[in-house]
Length: 92
Image (cartoon, rainbow, N blue to C red):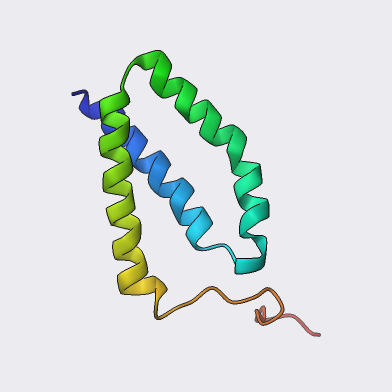
C-alpha cells in the first residue's frame, strides 16, 4: 500500500465530502452536478495509477472524518441559508 497516494486521496475525498456537507440544502444538487467531472477525474486517476485499494481505504477514512466533523461541529453549527447570513461592516 502506497502511503503517499493514501494521504492525497484522503485529503481529496474529505474535501469533496466536506464541500457537499457544508453546502446549503437547496444548492446541494447543483454542487453535486458541478463535482461530477472532478469525481470522474479522480476515478480515472485511481484506475490509471492502480491504487484502488488505497482509494477504498481513503474513502472509508474520509467518511469517518466527515462524520466526526458533523458530530462534533456540524450539528451545533448548521448551514444557514444565504438569506440569513449577514456580513459585518456593510452599510445596508
